[in-house]
Length: 399
Image (tube, rainbow, N blue to C red; front, side, top):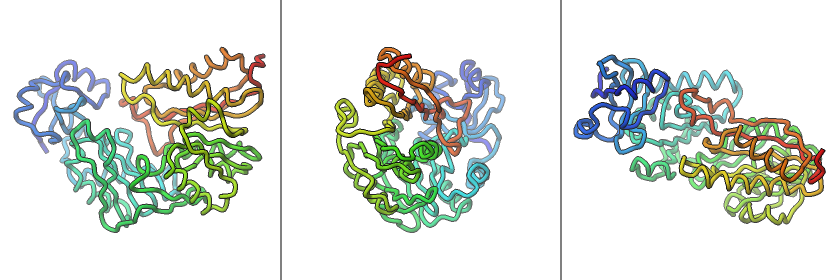
């Protein structure tokens, strides 16, 4: 199947040979001519400067990354294409999570479908579309998804700021059955209420699944402080792991109320204590005490221009997190979901603070995103979630 041709220039072709899948207008030949003939989100066939076929993709010359590759094969981008892609993705998830009913089915470039996110919550699919090219293919996605997986409802949760970069409308829309605002799912025998309309991202941060499980292993008889708690997932896993109690530090009253409802569903509502407010301000003068502090903030670095400011915010947050254990022992689980803060940079920040404050400590575990959020080596942005577990032996008792 041939679509309107787009040629990569020498710079773009060199990027293609390195395996890159995103291209700017600086990587393309005859950009002004393309502006005259192509609409935002059009499917295109991609060629080298001298006319060799390279793949199929979509284009939006209004976006920074104007061209994204969908396949290196000369295949139509139709319902069959998406069904094959969804089948491959599902087979992979069944290998890594054979018994799970809640998981991420499609992780954009991690599954070679740029601009598309699909989370499965048992019989409900929550879909997010980031690009004009993928938005234009929405009906194909719906039909292929319904053939791939037995679903009762599909929700397009397209109300996030990233869509503004491609002039896309904001909306939340249901297909098939309307499941309402909340759906109940079970993970590791823990019942969760997932907010479909008012929740963050797709409703539940499934990329933290393995990290919830790890933290639950070390929480027996501990008091947990769950900062930036959202629905309190770290708290619920900690209580299942035998924690005495958990404090939820969160600025959203809606998220706290829902976390308390989840606690009630699981029979440990008497062990969950809300602490509503700005987390950084709360950590500067902690109103509660605990043995394990979990810090899972939103991304402080969303683009390259935010790097310097974002690193300052992470340094301040990590300092107050470490200072939480003033003159006592404890455990820290620190996270970042900013792609632009690497694990090495994060570790260096933490070690810098520990050394400056003369704190005796040990780093004993490295966290990363769950395997249903696979990393595409050709798209470094797909590697974003990282974290470190730290044992604080004693503040200002360096040895």
